[in-house]
Structure formats: C-alpha cells, structure tokens
Amino acid sequence: MIITKQAKNGFFYREEQSFDFSNYKAEDFEKHIRSSIPNYEGMRSLVCPIAENFVMKGENIYDLGTSSGDLLYGLEDYLPENLKLSYIGYDIADNLLPKQVGKDINFYNKDVTDESLKLFNTSLICSLFTLQFIPLDKRVNLVNKVYKSLSKRGCFLVCEKVYSAQGITEDIFTFSNYAMKQQNGFTTYEILRKQFDLKTIMKPLTQAENEQMFKEAGFEVVEVFFKSLNFMGWVLIK
Image (cartoon, rainbow, N blue to C red; front, side):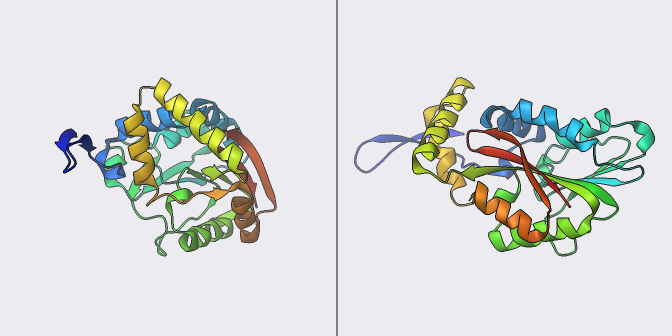
C-alpha cells in the first residue's frame, strides 16, 4: 500500500509497505524475482541439465530457501521418473511455500541455519539467492554442512548476488540492473525503496570472498556457470 503524507517541511512524500518476504504470496514472489534478476530465465534453463549429471537413483534433492518451490517442480518434470528421486524444499517464510505438492515433493517451513536440519542421501543440493540473506557466521556453517552432507562427487548448485571488486563496475552493474527493473515495470521509487530495505537484511560478498568460503568448506571444483551483471551462479563439486 502507498500512502501520501505531508512532512513538517511542507513537502509531500510517499510511504509504502517495506520489502519483506512475509508480504508476498508464492506466485507473486516468483514473478518479482524473475523481473528483478537479469537473465534469470537463462540461468534457470541451465539448472536442470547441470543437475542430471549428479543425481543418483533413490536419492534426495534439496532446495535451501525454496520459496515457491518452482525449482523443485522444474527438476521433478525434467529428471526421469524411474530414478525415484525425492525432492525436499526448506524455507523460513511459510507464506511463500506452495500449498499443493507434487508426487515426490515435500516442503517444510524451516530455518536452513537450524542446527537440527538434516541433509542426507544426496548428491545434489541447490541454493538460489538464499545465502546472501544469512549472517556470515551461519552462512559458513551452512556451506560446511552442505559439503559434509554430499556424497563424493556430489554438487552444491549456488546462485548469489555479488559485489564487484571494482567500484566502477559495481556502479555500472547496479544501475544497469535498475534500468532493467524499470523496463520490467518497477518505478524509480520502488527500486530505491527496496534497496534501502535490503541493506539491513542482505549481505552479499564479492566473487572472490564467496569462492574462498566454498574452497575452505572443502569443495574441490568451484566453477562459474552463470554471470549476469552482479549476479552469479556456481557449480561446486565435492
């Protein structure tokens, strides 16, 4: 909701509900993400063919920060049914989780940093734009848990927003992303307001910092499969 108010100095300003995951329905959030991340569709089109190189019959596939569950639905449709895979999605925002589930899909309202979270019998774990919202110490612990949980040659498929190591490219990429959002229907006010809101809950790292964290967890292969402006994806292999 947007409300027009008058400040003490006489100027009018607009006040609207802050960006918060709890403000979205699953279908609306998915549309928001696709309109906010450059070349999101291209990234998503690569996930399934990459994933099929790692899954083994009878295993679990996990999605950490699954939100609407769209990724798991896509994997279930793409991967052969005779593999008898189980798809498990975790998300702290109960309002984003789908009410309908697939034959072999289960969703759980759970904090992925909870120490009681178990990941087992798996060679594929996904996390798309989730780690950046987790405090760094808990983020490191989660990446370490993922590494230990994966079978040998298993894959952690990760996408994150990153900070550029160079100030000039950080500005270029950021404002190019703003231009894309405007083309997708966001107003200047909505873009700026969201940036203010995200500063308190999202803590991206640089590419180098992310890759150092992945390697320190033990991943032997750290390979970029997606990059669009300041958004990146990695294939991490144990």
